[in-house]
Length: 351
Image (tube, rainbow, N blue to C red):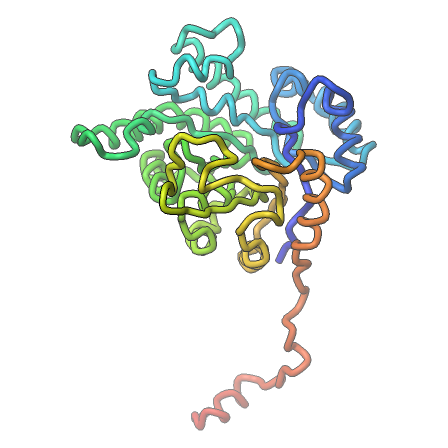
């Protein structure tokens, strides 16, 4: 059995214009000073040249050496924003255009082609970096129809997932060629947002071995899904892990949907690690039980706390929850050492 690796930190929420958040090397020094051992690296040109990484082993080696000088490695590359653009419903065209490179904005077909190419580059870059997993979003074609009113036309959901599969299959094949698992963060706003939708997609891509899950319990708590039972069901497909907290406190005026309110006013809110309701002791126990092979990665989002405080506290929180798995059973000392003949005799069976 393997011990979970960590703590690691997702850099997306910390990028900025001011030192130390303005470059990959400065962020690496900051993350290392907090006790992190790895970074989950967004494929953002402010930090990382994805095209160069896909084609240049020397560039990847330079990045790896720089991080190693800070005592860090890469847990996974992230293409969350690019993955979102693989499938965009027209209702969201304008809002999601800002995620794309400037030269494809305003052209949905060009934007989708660019996003697909970004994922292809990420597969090759992940292979050059020696990574086992990659994290992304699925995008969404059916999300505007999440609630069945007005009644959805027959076949709409089925065709949405068939189209999603058509768009993602070539990408999944590229990750298979690279020997890297593609892990979808199951997230509201994506067509893949819970177990049922992941099952739909998995069936549509023929059970593709590289179609896997980035497990983030915060999104499941806010959907009121049993996030512990989810691990029991899907542990073989969980290949990445965001350690993010949340709370859900419904009242007489609001519930899961939140009434279009801002994050501070919603019944369901993301919180800094340890400030929410998620049972991380149970989660880390299940991850150890099922021999989760990857990293425990802080994704910091909170409606209240300062991000630098959340990052500092998060490293210790994750470290304190990682279970170093035993190399032998706890009761090995009491083993009887009986052989098969003795075992049969104990049960009154003839030898």
